[in-house]
Length: 102
Image (cartoon, rainbow, N blue to C red; front, side, top):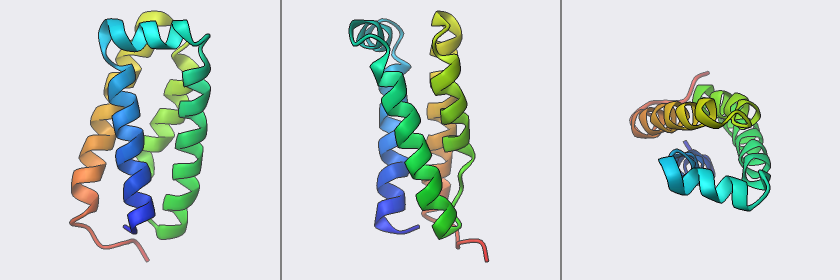
């Protein structure tokens, strides 16, 4: 994975992990009128484009796109952010050891 791909993979992980914090993440989303979900959607979409060009793992970011839409439902959003963060963490850790797909 290139440095840009790693940056987006780890950046989206950090953002999802923050949003998965039970009270803090939810308060942040509500206080900003759900705009953080739109930002998350855009970050995941850009990450998918970059990772497709690099032939990197995109599953976590694809789940992140779905999470950004479903997260309008309070408790479902919290669970989805946590799941997405875990998937992105696993992909980030394994992506540095893996060769790109050809």
